[in-house]
Image 1 (cartoon, helix red, strand yellow):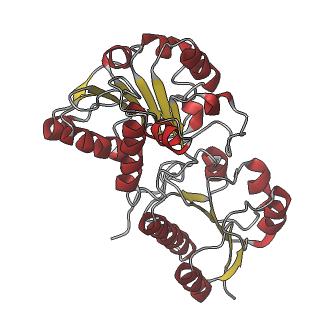
Image 2: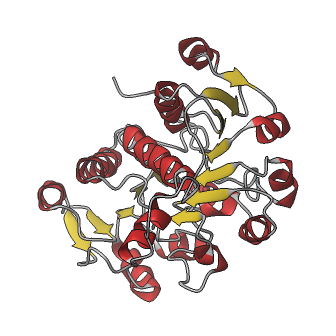
Length: 331
């Protein structure tokens, strides 16, 4: 008898075919609509594995329903939507999809930085609304990116990829991370500083750290007050890292110059959210990894992780290896 898996959105046809060749596959047949919570809970009763998105909260309520569950394969790098501790206590593997989305997410991060600095969205809207009357020296002037200082909070793979792009613009690069990255310092000439110094000196502050208990509300009124009044905050990581109420107040009071945001505490973000009212805030709907090729690679890797776990192998991207006391790696 084939093992049964649940996929919480409709995967690409070739990925679905691969999974169906190995397993009995139940999937939520929608590309855009999230699986209803009650449906998810009902379907957990008899599945051996689940391939889920960051939109699904896999907490103890879900895990308690999954009596046969062996693996949770998350279609994302971040896995703050999963209670890893509770899953580990039940011996359930948790996997993610790092690496394949690094460059694409770095592209979007730098695109947000450029768009905010040069007021591209605002300028396009002015043109489309017929408000462009003549060329004027100070009309829609923004901030220079070249030769400015970029501060990166979280110098992981994506952070390093953003730093490489910044080097092409002749930017001075500072970073703050829980551990020093000596190899990247030597490769790119980036400089490690404490968070407070980074905030004070940077013209652009990019948030590229995972959302954890330690990084929740990492950026609050205190940190925003340290930033230059001409500085721009970019967040393509997770919404909960930045306190949104404090960010609204900083923007209202002119404590920072602008922000570029791909992520929010509540997603989808309500259309009446105060952050959407500022012309100097560029917003996108969590599309950091949203290129066709990258999203397909994410699906393929998530399916590979799921398949390996249910075949009794160690998945390529097992995030709770230590918690499960798994020492060996696949050859």
